[in-house]
Image (cartoon, rainbow, N blue to C red; front, side):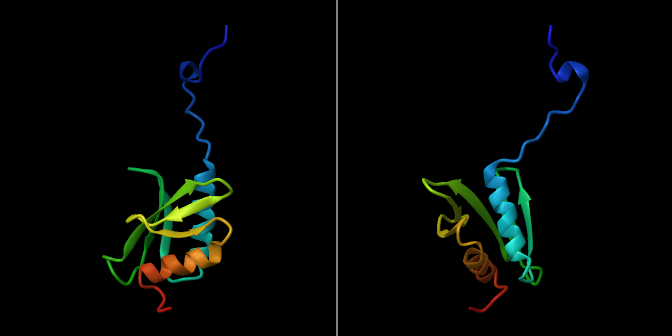
Amino acid sequence: MAQSRQANDQPPTHVPSEEQGHLGKLAGELSRYDVRAEVVEEPGLCLRVRNPDSVHAVEDVICERREHDYAFIASFGVHLGNSGSLSLTAHKVAWLVGATEQ
């Protein structure tokens, strides 16, 4: 008879979603800017981007599956880009938090 992982006191395996992977790639692109970006899971999966020069310059970017790719959406619902245009999307996010002027 097979036993569950819980019966063996093993921690559950956490498998990153595709959305997490794309948010991680966007965080990598954002490393070119003077911002802090981290994938957070609570209260919902997002990429939290902070401008260290301002406590108010914080944006949570979510990732949604679309028909042919993944879309990055600002917390207020504006489409910022897609998984095929990471550098352009990173630039928009950096601008949004005031890390770049253009």
